[in-house]
Length: 100
Image (cartoon, rainbow, N blue to C red; front, side, top):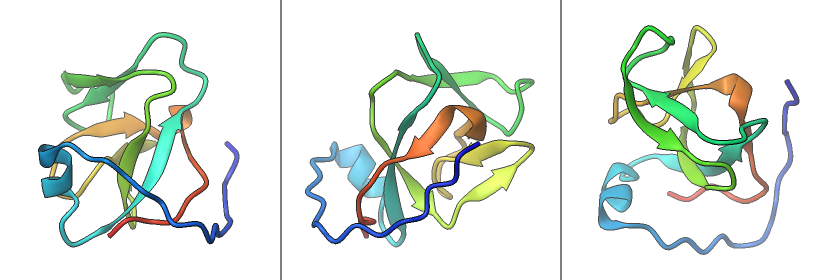
């Protein structure tokens, strides 16, 4: 899997739904999108395919994931406050600065 390590000096302007903004309190979040997904990426309630599906992430859709990352079994937790996990194999970080 390709690792993206770079800095970007442009300001990132983000429009968030109120529930998204609520989950972003206190952390730094970076933009991510799917990679290698043709229909949808399953968001699970835990870090393996044995956990139930709690949502979907569609190709081209951007989500802001909390840093530092919480990783387990090849899965990444979306935020520390939500029990939602995705396979790291199918996501990639986009250029842009973090949002606090």
